[in-house]
Amino acid sequence: MFQRITRATAFALALGAAPIAAQETEIIRAHGYSFYGDLSYPADFAHFNYVNPDAPKGGTIALSAQGTFDSMNPFTRKGRAGALSSSMYESLLETSEPMGGGLAPADAYGEYYGLLAHTVEYPASKEWVIFHMRPEARFSDGTPVTAHDVAFSHNLFIEQGLPSYSQAVSQRVLNVEVLDDHRVKFTFADEISRRSLIDQVASTPVFSKAWYEETGSRLDESRMDISPGSGPYMLDGFEVNRSITYKRNPDYWGADLPNNVGRHNFDEIRIEYFADGAAAFEGFKSGIYTFRAENNSRQWATGYDFPAVDDGYVVRDELPTGLAPTPTGFVFNLGREIFQDPRVREAISLAFNFEWTNETLQYGLFEPRASYTQGTRLQAEGPPKGLELALLESLGDLVPPAMLTEPARMPHTSSAERLADRRNIRRAKGLLEDAGWAVDDSGALRNAAGEQMVIEIPVSSAGSATMDSIVETFTQNLGLLGIDAQFQRIDAAQHTDRRRNRDYDMIFDQYGAFMDTGTGLNQRYGSETAEFSLFNPAGLASPLVDAIIDASLNAPTPEERDAALMALDRALRHELIMVPAWYNDTVWVAYWDMFKHPETIPPFSTGQMDFWWYDADRAAELRAAGALR
Image (cartoon, rainbow, N blue to C red; front, side, top):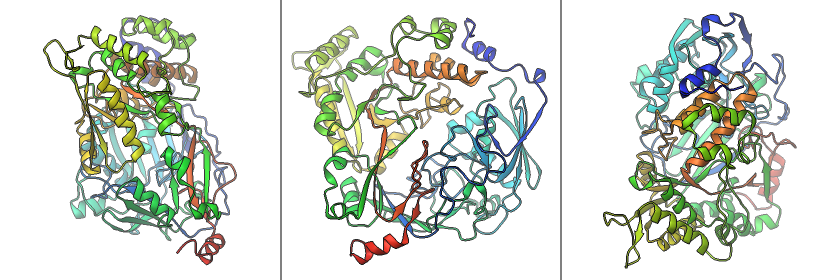
């Protein structure tokens, strides 16, 4: 059980393992890694359970992207990187699909299997780790992938990577040492959580040291030339702002690994660029690209009535997912003085009418999102109890008393009959008055200094008309409160720049959902990098949230970890850093009927670019019928 103490850091250490010197010295060697040591696949597994091991190779799958790109380097804040431009690089252990579609394996959460490394070796204390690499691993230019490349890549991210990443990792990883060409050792700091240490260094992309040294390129610059990767796909070509093509490397070194059986089946993956959502949909209808993940409710409800659907040439499907939905919504920039008062944030949230928006603009296809772990075992429900309550009580004055006795915050409800819910508008006005804001004779909301509340919400011009309508109607309701709410439609590049520089009052954005703990929670929700982290668009800096993250990182059992993550969900909802939007518990997809997938889709990936395959006979039928060029 958790014990009550006053300092959050001491609490976190108390939950953690004993000091390293007192821990077991057992050395673990395995073909993969999970924090608690449980791996679903044995060392001699033939392939992942969900793939078709006999899936044919060949064909092209084409997808779309909106806006523009001016770089093929996705590891810098500068420029807009081309779609899937990180997909050519592999890591020591496999943690995600190479084309960014989900986890790998997609049926086991928090498990990582050897990719560039065949064996991982570490003591039970996890104070260091040695990776034994596969000598056969090669970059696409034919040069070997060695431990020297691994160490170089790690140091490159520390020296030139995103500041939030560099700061967090450099404090935890003390040293990287090349033992020989195919063994690399990482040593970790003492008296910190053992979480996100081995898996962190295991998942870092590995670059060619020789290429960087020969070209003088930097990781923090925008550029169109790329280093060779070791993955199953390589860049084949691009036309700036028009298309990018990746082709399957016919000499891919890892094609026969058990990890890769039944995967990476397309010969070519192509990305077609469009100016906005309307143009992109027209491109799909005409067959310019062939697979579409739909995120526009209006389109899904009314747009798929074109001849190719009626003739059976295009398939619409709703694929199941076991992942928590992405927490999206209108994010407050907590760096703005007007949002420091939680009463102001709550008042503004009351101006958003989900029920009207869903019924009028989104065809009733969504549910209101309450949680950062919506629909999972980690979603906080009702008042805290058991281990979660014990944890919150142990944090003393950091926890608002109401959090110990009241149910987790739920989204407000509104009338679906009219956009302006009078009850919520009245309640919002009362909160604003309590916070020192009053409406003057002209109807403007002003503070004691006579300054009107102004809120700017930038929206990308590459987005959908539906999103424009949602933001516009939200600002209309804000206007009823006397707020000068300005809906700003700007081009995609400017939107990206303003988001990166946190140049907004509010923005429709997202946080990362969580189903396990890890130090990535600090980048998303922690105080240490709140000022500049790209993954924390609100700039949240909460001692309570920090303490709960620490507790999750140091939890000695899965049960205590889950209790801490449930408390984290509860605390984030209490902080009200965003006006929560909506979610869908399935993934909407549409595709030209020349792709096949396993009968059962695994819970953690839809896998269209990973374990789907091309049906050449059906593609020929579509062409013969004149459906496709």
